[in-house]
Amino acid sequence: MSYVFSRNTTGPFRACAALALVFCAAFVMPAIFAAAAPPAPTVDLNIAKFAFAPKEISIAPGTKIIWTNRDETPHTVTSNDKSFASKGLDTDDKFEHTFASEGDFSYICTVHPFMTGVVHVRKQ
Amino acid sequence: MSTYDPVEPGHNPARRQALSCLAAWTGAAVVWTVAGGVPRALGATTAGMPTAAAKNALTFVQISDTHIGFRKEANPDVVGSLRRAIADINALPQAPAFVVHTGDVSHLSKPEEFGKAREVLQEIRVDRVHTIPGEHDTIDEGVNGYLKFFDHDGNGKSWYSFDQGGVHFIGLNNVLNFKMGTMAALGDEQITWLKSNLARVSDSTPIVVLAHIPLWTIWEPWGWGTADSAQAMALLRPFGSVTVLNGHIHQVLQKVEGHIALHTAMSLAYPLPTPGQEGIGEPGPVTVPAGELGKLLGTRQLSVVRGRQELALIDTPLDR
Image (cartoon, rainbow over all chains, first blue to last red; front, top):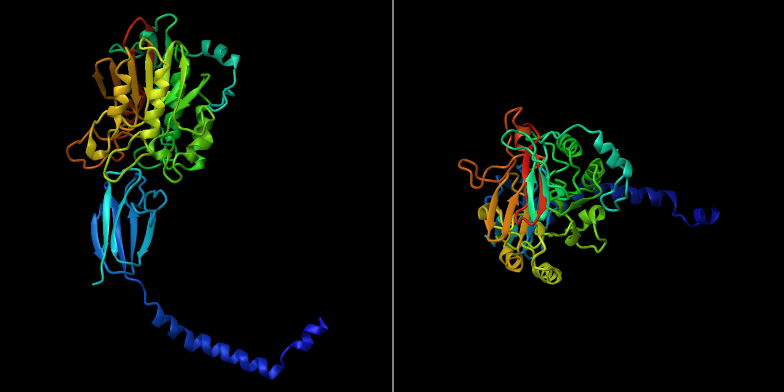
């Protein structure tokens, strides 16, 4: 243990470093985070009466979609290209996915494959 | 309570003795009797009295769509409904040879739901309960979660066959091969298996097929049909007596195509609307007034009578 202590920096230096950290945490870092990650736009989408509503939607890249199952019957949100897939969603369960890149993403409920939807991701 | 296990059934002679002491038919089940190759239903007639099964006929019971885990308004006590059906089955004057469950054993494919279902099904006083999966049994990990509890032949497949009482029984899985915007399907691997399985069966052997979703198209907008059922039907057409037993739509419907008779069964969980029912846009659970539910849930008794092409079947609600 004495060896470890002997390698420690001196008291005044430690205090200085600690102050610098506190300053960073209080003022600098929040500013960096705010600039780097604005909150993603969010779109709520219902699963109700055995249908995705709306069935077709256009969004900008970076948008997050939150699906909520309003039925008493379980459903899933499963993309055809396997890029996203929910577990079985019971009543009021939610599933979210953020669409980073452009494209057309069709999806189904694997329990009821006649339920289809599509997300168009385009720069706007 | 019996000690039978649906996966590894054991013999329990005490069960048979107990049956003789049980009350007379109460009519909540449908029992299939196969006599002479033709399943016929026994049980409640218009007079509410059961029809006696022919001697030496093979008699069995179909139950379906127990949806263990469902607890919404349409039926907050699905385990209670299953237990009422089991009491009726155990009280049949002629003990069925076995019970078939045509899928949607669970509601959300959860292990605890499969476990509870298996535990309660063990209360049926028969030697074996044959199950097939419904789409509610294959939600998160395909059929693997279901097979952990109901792998009947140990092959890791959800389709299988067995022979009993001179009848060839085939259990199918038509809930996995989903493609966008289409109905469910059996898939090529299973169709190939079915072809080779049937190749060793004589044309005169009665065949009973179990499949969760109907093998004929009842209402495509709700997915009430099997996309490749025509291929399966073509393989079954040469046989003299074919009976297809389905679940999924939670109501009794029949169709006859030549020597092939197709029957859907009632659920033991909740009713669904009639196909395309006006004013109801989706096949979701229907909540009925108190006291009505038991009239819409029930079981089916079947008998195969030797020398007759059609099975006798009787659909019997829990409340009569």
